[in-house]
Length: 577
Image 1 (cartoon, rainbow, N blue to C red):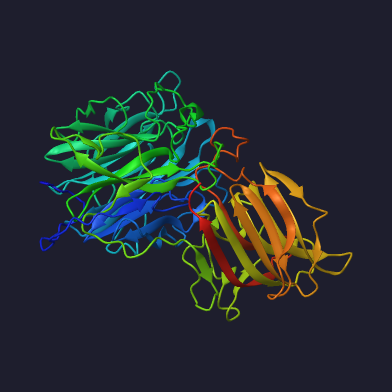
Image 2: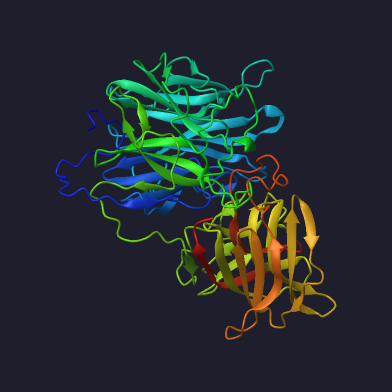
């Protein structure tokens, strides 16, 4: 029974669980790019915020009533609060931390904007925003510090507020990545009320301590950390103290309390984040770490954490880092552990006691663009979505996209994309496009970042004086043209479909809806569109995001051409690897 519950879900005193209805929930609960999940509970509703890096709108916000079905309800940064143009992979918006202050009834969201990772400088500015409703509006960003990254707020029961963050170490001869530091802070001004206190460099030998978060249970303070780097050695570790500034003692096991690779690792000061030697061949789930703790309205405890599912027989994770949940409990001597007593993250967990699950999660998408607002799931790399270049108001029943920079650009690409959430799926669209210059294109594709994508598109043939369909690919920044893969599109109208299956892409087209799909290109390996593959095969981890599907347009001529898209559809056939 929870005796003292801070900043979790308010317990409904009228709640009576007559029968212990337990449901089995499958992980990941949020498939596709949803890393660094930060979870809270307010008034029997659960909320998760996740990182978005170079994608806008920034910071995804999800809501659930049962921990199984998570609905995207908005984004925290969507009104030009942040400029992501020119952001190199994997910089951008990192590790949001969601909290709730019951005294002011405000949601708080702390985050870092990573602007440089060269020279091991890791320049990041950290901010917080607040709202009285998770859907916003959110306040203007309040600047905190540039000392490091992964900020988190703790609202103590006496009304004081604290900020904890990783102090990034740049000096030779000092243990990387640095210290976890803590200070009292004034909200909402963001001013420090105390000096920074260096609390720890980690509670295990895995190193790479980051993502600090503070919780309170039975009068003791608990400092939750991510460890091992965001690769195959990732984990969650915990320390405990009688006072908030410590000293903190490590969990008696000396190991992470949650991981997908339980083997011992000594990696203090090691800058490597991949740790491919730590892959667990017996588990579908890999990279489990960066946890966030929530007490529930049913007097239970759960931890949300990131994880990844590699392609079978590979070390490549095309869906990126996804969000999962594990059931936790407190031991008799007041230590936090997984409920089953192990530290191995599982692909299923028992849901909330007495809370039924009404339906199976469904991540299929469809938009016929009949409404003024297009799918909330649409995101854009590097630039904000704005009606000046993307709109449903220009033509009823269509999404109009005006051509932007080439897809290699980190400034103004005209891309509307959604997260890939399955290892086998189809994405399709119908577009109308009348180019009159070879630098004008529009189509459908797969996208990781500006250097890695696949693009089936219509463009203009000067020889035939009409539009034609072809394929262009970017792999590790290199341009690959499929000059022998061209189909004349006399009217400029065409249905396009890509079937993705475990790292293989098949591209199809048809000129009329009643026609059979025709093959444009078969069995093209696109497994490199993954966190590890964008730096080579497998290479070091080069990205922290994941595969996206997109529709878009390019106009490197006059920025005047546009394409009209009649619908956008994603059909998932499998969520498992």
